[in-house]
Image (tube, rainbow, N blue to C red; front, side, top):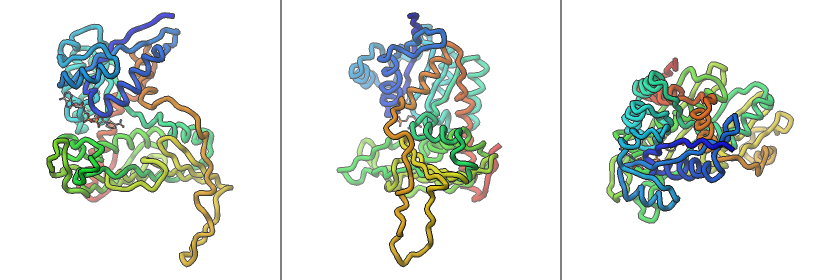
Length: 381
Ligand SMILES: NC(=O)c1ccc[n+]([C@@H]2O[C@H](COP(=O)([O-])OP(=O)(O)OC[C@H]3O[C@@H](n4cnc5c(N)ncnc54)[C@H](O)[C@@H]3O)[C@@H](O)[C@H]2O)c1
């Protein structure tokens, strides 16, 4: 069998996303399975080099995972024709400058979201990549989550009739660091605006491609943002002022008439099936979709509630929901998208999740902020 090696520069890979989802769960997993098969039967095998600022961290990461190549000299690998793809999972404010260098070096580009901190820069970098003729893509992982895939099939099968509304609930309690026994489980930059933090720029990128792909093109947004927790403790144990939003409450209208409401918060405790759930209600049925699971209730299984707060409900509202395709195994969502990107680079397979599509997420975040500031609805062109 023919094998095609693709050199991949993995930048900012010592971080949470870079290490777990992109290096281990995607690139190394694809290597372990012997690559991904292109249309003509060629096995496309990614060959990674890890890049970043801290040589020691890179060395430890490389050793832990049996990766041979790592360097702090990005310019050297950018100048090396053995590497065709540049991937970035560094902090959001550094993304555009990295992508600019990689595009100038003629690399194909793949990167985490948000692609930039503001829409102007996100659009510019997409245009720069297009003008240079390099292939490009943005991580839009939620589209391949098991729960979402199960939902999509039901939607395509017409299970819902006409979809009316969507209510998304994302969030969990992120510890502030004030309690020494409970260290914060997210990096501190998430809570500093000056470092590219904030839940709107983080999550509204995801809501943009989810809504656009599943329910209808987003046409208007109404949003409220809050910084509920004013002070947190950083990685060095120092208190810092939270300057970014840690919760956002938003309504999105779409060109199909489906109304989508999404709450995003790092200041809520979870009493739902998963850290992200979405209830979709349609004329013929409803679904509660999580990261992995999907529960449905058809019109015929819908109970008839009667309002009476004086007695305990005679109906257990969790009873009449059925889990869809329980136990079915799916590939990791990031890996699935990586495989498609590698085939896009090697064989020219379609890959619609471009930097330009990624820019739309940044645009929605920016317009959400416009709504927060004005207190009104904002059109999404
Ligand atoms: N797709 C998703 O679901 C998802 C989830 C979380 C985060 N993200 C995105 O992934 C990116 C990384 O987030 P994270 O949570 O892994 O953060 P992190 O802080 O854990 O990782 C950031 C990494 O970038 C490195 N870095 C920072 N500045 C750098 C520079 N100038 N040069 C080289 N490396 C640099 C850091 O050392 C670290 O390794 C962010 O843009 C974030 O928005 C995406």
